[in-house]
Image 1 (tube, rainbow, N blue to C red):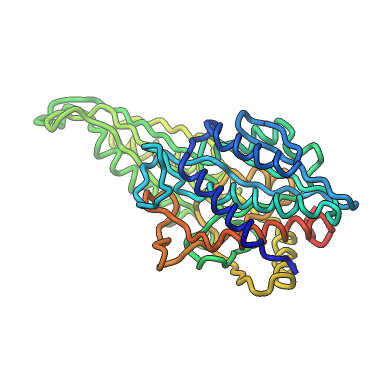
Image 2 (image 1 turned 30 degrees about the horizontal axis):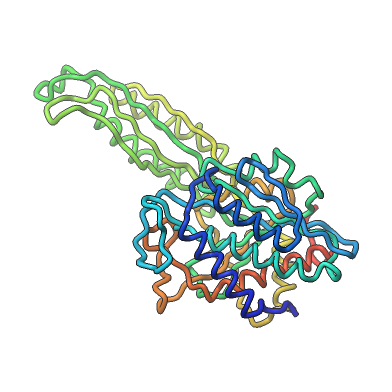
Length: 394
């Protein structure tokens, strides 16, 4: 059985979470959070090092031979003004832990407490990855580039992410795709400006841009296998000068998302074709620029399935769901591409606690009753992985 955290440890994890929540920091600005992590690791006698500016890598070495596994938590907050009314709400205007990274960090520190206390019974080694800048510009790649997975060499990796879709204390493990890729789309439509009273003398970019927005939805409706997921969203439109002037230029930005790498790879060419041809039909010209962002998160199938079996055997009271993938993105994808990985969802929903809002909402909150279950799940992955009880595809 995987033992539940003691009341004392649960209280400590909750305290850490609230401390981090009060002092949110954006990507690569997590100086206070990283220092807190380092103090906690030092108090446990866990070796650690800095990587990627504000990232922290800790290593717990067991006394018994075994495999090397990693546990990852992200630390950064979002540029959102909090509206929860919690007694430990953000003390920094315009910054908030609106996605649960404060909980992720505190639960990983809780798991560190448990694992450090059983070094004499621990196989292999557990690498603790405290990652900056998940919300952007991305901290996983620089951590990997600076050797976070190399000393000791990690063989598999897991992360927890809070999820308001399921009740507090339940978890979700899904083999295969779980998060989408996220690429940035920028479109510029150029025409010929003029007086609004004489449209026949100009090339109006506003109707051209409007037609482009509608035409792009054809990618999902008619050009993609209905059994595969794709999102083409235009999020901003800028153009024009005043009510009686025909706009000579319109700029748009959006996001392209997919679970299937093949679908993702074909999106840019489809967008290019539609945008250029629709603009041409209106007598305008258009340019398309796509910036690649995070790739899809794909859980290693044998790892996800064997972890599910292990938890059902060793923690049977925890309800495990196989959740549908989401179109949200996660830069854990880079860790899961480097070594077999599994992204686990932790339910934090509670109507009684008001924990019903989605991530990135100024009203986002979690039911802290889920925290010890998260600690227990991370410890379970570490124990099973280091002892060789989990299978991977490689």
